[in-house]
Image (cartoon, rainbow, N blue to C red; front, side):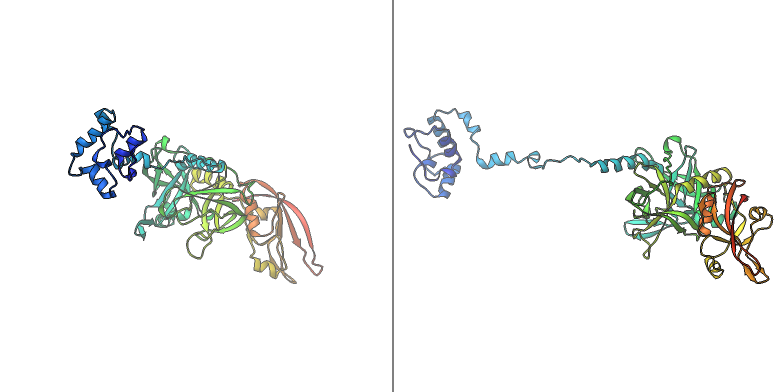
Length: 440
């Protein structure tokens, strides 16, 4: 058998040889005749060698091998065959489907269930300021939580500070905010929000929108009673105007004293390392079941942005305040009708624990129960009664006393244990328990 020297450079010869059809008795095409250089072989196969017509030579070779002329179609050049095989589908990498972990699936489910109950709130009196070429941060921008199908939405008081200052005591029922809701199809719709009620002391406010019921998705409210440090939490909000942003973390502290942006102290705060930034104010802090356990309200920072220390108002405080705001526009708190001494005054009078009563309002709840204020006696200053326990709850200071009374209503009766300093040269202290009917 004839074995050409440059077999790999002639596609026709390669196909014929691989098919086992070459026979030395047949007329060889010009490209098979003798050893030639690679360039001459290619030229011979493609263009002919000047002695034979290239088309007739290829046809002659096929006929000599007993192959039909149609076989020419199957013996295409290698370069053409390769080009035909390089389709988009052939070179597109396979897509690996996303398979979330059980924890990821749980978080995704919570976000998809709760995101429509989170709204964006803008103070109507303030304009946006440029924060970056690609973003605008509206002053007075915050977040709100849909409470019910009537359109009541809770947010922070400080989100509406500017408009509330401008309206003064006549703010109830007035337009104070623009509230943007997210529709199920992903389209946003904005409504006017009118003030229902506000509580500066707890940094809470309620606005109402006249939106269709199908757009109002109330969030489920949990409890802050059984929270634990280390418990996983999720924060939803609109930081810097980026709506419906999710951040996650854990509860990193409990019973923190929060100083709000309007200067009030809020007891029992929840501390978290979930990123809370300007714009998150008024948004929900959720537990791992998707229940609201707090309302994001403040951060501890030297830069104005999150450093991993954020605070939320406990939902149990919200549940005590908000119904009163919806009912009457204001909050009436139960009180002993007393003034509690500062820590410095208490230390000067050697009081190391409890809430020292500096003054008692005449005719008030404490006065009616016989509690005594700090006063001047024959031997000098006599410390007033020191509240130690309220209905079994220990009181270590003025803040604890406020927290203890927070859960009661005006007219409730509570047992108050106090330490009383003796008068005269004998001095000494005694402990007694009195029942107090709480006043306003």
